[in-house]
Image (tube, rainbow, N blue to C red):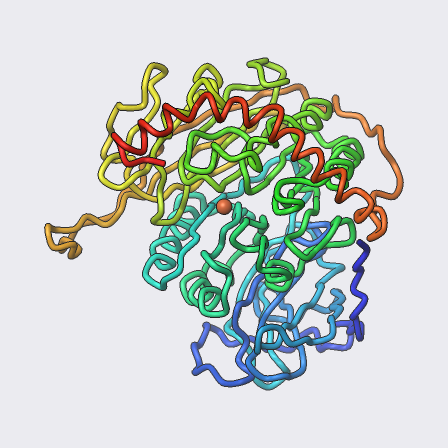
Length: 506
Ligand SMILES: [Fe+2]
């Protein structure tokens, strides 16, 4: 579906602005929320990260959209272009979107949004300088329905930037909220506001953000949807950063991933000669968590990995199951040193899943596991290559990840921010601190300059093409479910029942 700013109203050139005019306050000032006060502000990756950013914000009243961009000294930028979409109403609020382009690569910018009279606090973002060395951080699955747990998740995100101050963007692997309601997105905004004002976000659609809550995800972020196969239940898109190509998938597409999106992915991955190919998605194909027994995520072990294997993807990062699991390199569901490493990110939220032991060597072979950390409250177990009952109390908390690329070397460090210690009444212990512990680290090294472009041209899926593939997509999932998943599931039922009865784990 092509949706290239069909609602675009106007293009405003910053050239007209006075180059020497200092417009931004020296420090951010918090003001009371009025009908025109900008909320839910985000700067998202949109197209070329060295020159473009996609900004979104909301207001309670219908008002004009104005974005101001400045250099780090507060001087208005004079050479960028700002394209505004038409303001539209969504669930009782008004959505503003703007695309900022013609930015200078490798530059730290200040910005604020508003209507020309009422402005937001000042935020900042950095543009990619196109070199082969950069870092970013990831979080996943805060999935909260109350303000308190959003604040806990925000502490994990803040710990990520405190640990990796050079991170140039933050990937959120989805399930931003629990039920994707106005109230929950406001909780998210209240908790994450300062973090969102200070970085660029790469959002991934989770099932709690898209499936059954249509259009919410696409209305929260200004992403490049020009190649998205649909935008109702989430968005798929891609971008280059440094010497890496990133494809962001939408696993709400026909309950998992549609044939149209798989076709898009294969073309997309074959259209780049960047050294690194990295895929972000929400539902993870390899897991030992609560949702790893259902066919929607497990279908990815067949459908998605088939494409990833062909296209030499280095790293896949996902969420959905609230634990941390890293596989050995896999190809065709076998350990293969030329294969793809899959990382289930671990949750930054308070809801955490223990291992479903009945899944092991059934849908998920233990020989595929290279690292596993279970964050479940009360214990922090990890995989030692033999079993997952090795306890490390430092592993109880919310997880974030640091990924650094330096030429032909990729490093992933995964950290736990320990929960705030509490007394027997659940009250915080005075003076106790939350501690960051590195619980996993690995590197991939490769020869650069080897990837070749084998697809050129249009990778846009029309609505008619997408619709024509919906039924075959469902049939593919159904065929997998009845011929491959169900026989294994039925064999697993006694072990599952034992787990429910003896361990109270479903
Ligand atoms: Fe999920």
